[in-house]
Length: 302
Image 1: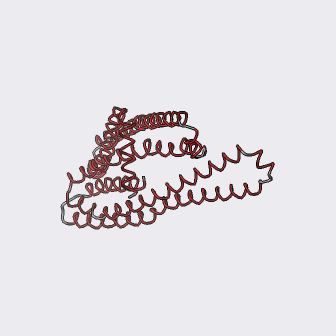
Image 2: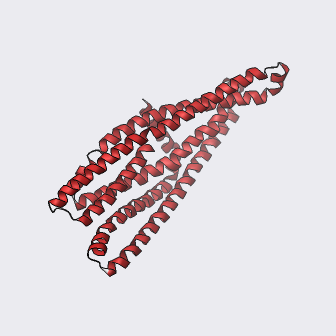
Image 3: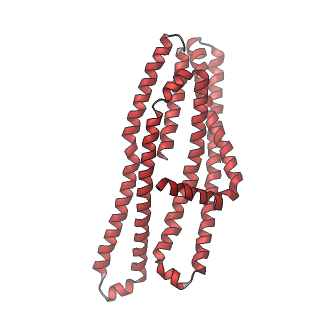
């Protein structure tokens, strides 16, 4: 149910706000493709580097490959910078439009409608809720594009080199995917609870500020202090929950990573003994696989 609701929100967000900035999305996608390609190129360069520089001791390659690596990393950093810049602008333009619409809605609403929803709820929506949307666009959206393309290019390069080793390397990834899906559901639930707590606290704070004179007249300071303590404690508890859910993945994902790398090394040793791959191929695959696992873990936690 939570997943369907998130998909519906994303669909509305795209059709109502992102679609008109589609050129920014396409440009960011192109730049993300460059980032993915340069990540794969870095791993690709490791194969000739090991063979030509360390095994054959070729002095020409000893100069050329480091220069190529510098160029590749510079291209990756530049592309990632511009991609992030574009998505940041997109995120805040979307927020600007949403806040303008919210302000217009408040100004045009009748008094009865405004009184039925406390001003604190509106303030929370203006600040907290739109902040969550901005984070989704500027961070989640870019990471989804960049990490997905990086995974595809790395796996494509690995399959091209040796399909057996690549297939073996991918065997345990579905386990991480199942865990990531479970974590995502839990994260959606605690984030929703945190939003409610933030709205309640904002409402209480607004009431205290607006009614400070009445509170002093009727000597309700102690009562309001206890209410504010309860609201702050509830908000802190929800934030702690979010933090704990985020770090819950760490021990499991690291253990799975260890198992996958151990299996990868064992099977690589078998293929080397059979003469199917060389030492330089192993280092190339290991570099690719390490990049795949790092990208996969980041994508799972996003």
